[in-house]
Length: 191
Length: 301
Image 1: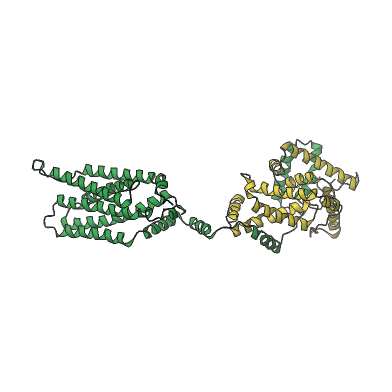
Image 2: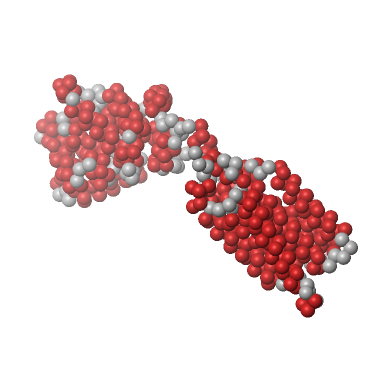
């Protein structure tokens, strides 16, 4: 069943095939939750909740997919859910991107000093990334983390291709400026 | 340039790094980025592609599946059974359909058909003057009788008020009709071939010639009965078709046996082929017309 396309799996799911649902979940739970985790500023618990809600909407509103491929449609639902979440006033007040907590992911082959440096730099990058608005974060993540084409990103976010390109350029420039301001002009993280 | 100490440079595999590098190059081309922008953006984009992932545990997956299970579309047992059947091999499905269609025929049909053939065999073997003409006449009379019985038995379901039930079944009406025709006419043909074999052994006649004597009229009467059953009850349709055939046969032989037409050698082979072709054409026409006639056949409430 691993070689079956997403669309075929969804058809089987809608026919009541629980095994097909398991395969579909195993295929997308990891990348989708990580995408939402990044989009929500590192809130893993929220990302898992949004993933669950995304799959529930897949089951409930499958008719809205039409002839669209499954993956962009799935990510569109997830992105819209995250966007709706950010729109609530309570979330806007409570949300802070200053110091999101990420699990350590050090390279075991590097020394303790290198690991400490890497951890610090990662926190800086992530914090800088989280200062971007959700529109820019979504575009950057979909293109560079989820490795989708620009056209797929445009389809997911329901925006013109030109807007995707513009947001990518502006997002990267802002990220660069934020990091430069944080690190100083002479010792940037990536220079 | 990439810093070797960059936080996400966990020594990616070479091919993975190459693919991502190509992806980035493509992106910069699409964005029409300047060399300066590429130099600034590449390390940033590279970090995003190498952002370390958190891992979903099997327990997370089980929790998610448990939460999704109540939202799964409800599928009725009938639909599940239909889907399970559709997953079978096409030949197996066809065999199943034939078995089911055969099961709706009453035992009397199978028995009566055998009895008719056995009577034919008995008459054929016990007759002292087993000329080719008499054998042909016997077969031409018995073959269509089998067809008459078959059509009357196979399509009696319309009058037995089973049609609504059958219309609700997964196979199309056309499939049902074809399957049913194949079952009953296949059975008749098998019996007829037995009769031909016995006649050949007893009289030394040609097997193919004998088979033509009964098979072609069988097809014609089956076709006529099937066509008539679109307008008449199947018992009447079968009876009328067989009656027409017997009358035509009697007229032909009566005319042919007139003294001035002797010596008579039976119905020409070309005629028999023509009869068979007409019968097949009627069967095909009836099969295609049957679904369109269904509204008339449905029981009135």
